[in-house]
Structure formats: structure tokens, C-alpha cells
Image (cartoon, rainbow, N blue to C red; front, side, top):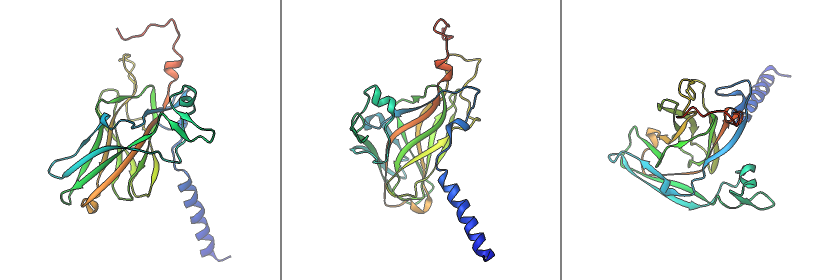
Length: 241
């Protein structure tokens, strides 16, 4: 067989393997310990647009938020939420109630420029345990803008985590790992643990900062390690006084 053909096949196999690894493995990422109890938790389903607000410089344009009925069809419900009655699904796993809305942001750009805008919760969302990954369903309208998750570490320092470009059509689940460098625990301060979710930052591509832009969000989830909480003895004291 021609060497060029062999080389082409090898490149194709490697590329396919790389693209297949779409999501990080929570067991092998972030702060790892000898024992882990990983849980996937939905920390916001974006059911109420009033819980979120836009941050956008007035000199650059205008941004609105609005809620819409709908759901990504490929989204799989969390079994614990079904068991506890938080959401209701039919026999095919289609969500019937408890998770029926998404939020959308509409941006009017006044002019081209180096522009960022943010979507923030009215109050930061505390995440239980040690966060391993953060994911959200996004419809980014096939642009070169970049989505970043904004979290605050154990000391309240804000960190931007790159979730990737929005250059795809329809809904897509974007996932990012929380690196070990993001401090989530300090044994000298036992009254708090983990991260708080502070919102999303959209870093706009300068060539696409004109006209009108739309972006939609649904179901913000984390995979978190709850071992330290579940392994606490019932008779143990809480160091929070």
C-alpha cells in the first residue's frame, strides 16, 4: 500500500480518537483523592429568567434576557431528580414537568470592537463538595465567540474557565474541568468548602461584533465529589461556630 495512503489513514484514526473524547473524565480530573463519591447535580435549570441578569457595557450595545419554553432533545435527565420527584418523565425518558424552560440572551452591537458580555445570577450559586466538572447546554448560533464559566474559589477569587467556542448549530453540551490550581478547600477554614458559580462570560470575536446576536442556555450541571460530606460521622461536631 502506498505510504501516503497509510499516513492518511493513520491521521484519520488519530483525529477520530481525539474528537471522540468530547467530555473530560470526572474521576481523573481536578482535585483527586483516594476515595471519591461523585454525583452529577443540576444547580440551575434556567426556569426563571428573573434569577439572571445581563452585564454589558452601554457604550457597546444592549443586551436582553428572556425565558422560552423548550428543552434540548438530547439532554438526559438525572435519575436522582426523577426518584425524588423534582422532574417527571414519561416511559421514553422525555421530560414532562419540572424542567420546561430555557433562557435566551439577545445582544445588539453598536459597533465592532473587543467586547465581552456576561450572564450572571442574582446571587452566586454555591456548589456542594469539590467540583470536578461544570457543564451547560448552549445554543450558540455558530459564531466564533467563546464561552467561559466564571467561578469563585475558596477565598472568593474569580476564575474564568474556558468552555470552548460557540461555532456549532443547535444545542450542544459544553463541559469544562476545574483544574487543581483552583483552590476549593483549606483545612484552616472549616466553615466553607468548594466553589460558587458566578455566571457566564462570552468573549466575542471582533469580526462578529455587529448586528444582532442570540444565545440560549439550559441545565447548568456539575459533577462534584461529596465524599467528605457523606463520610462525616453523625456524632461529629461541625466546625462552624
